[in-house]
Image (cartoon, rainbow, N blue to C red):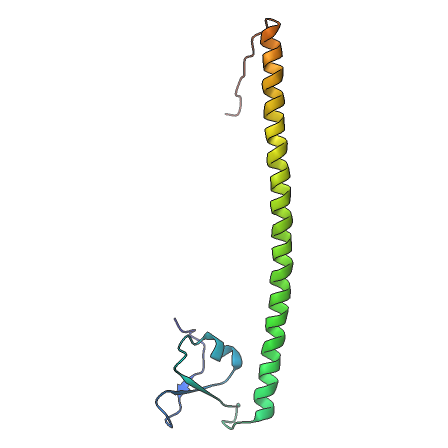
Length: 117
């Protein structure tokens, strides 16, 4: 699906050509058969302007990649923390079972009341 705010129009020169105003717009078009023609604000093709926009977009991608990398590291740490907590829960369940068995061995009955309501 195409983004609604794209300023892409057929160039008229070639039915498979589309003029777009930004590198970001080109990245959102899924059709590899479309030829993209970059136009500046005044309609001309400036190599410097196109290069500048491309560099800006590359910088945005790098920042996004760095942010996603940091988030992935955070998720990895959360997964490790979760694994440790799961192991601690399992250890406590086993300890609880041993203590209950000891209580039963000494003739004491274990009654669990659930007052969570």
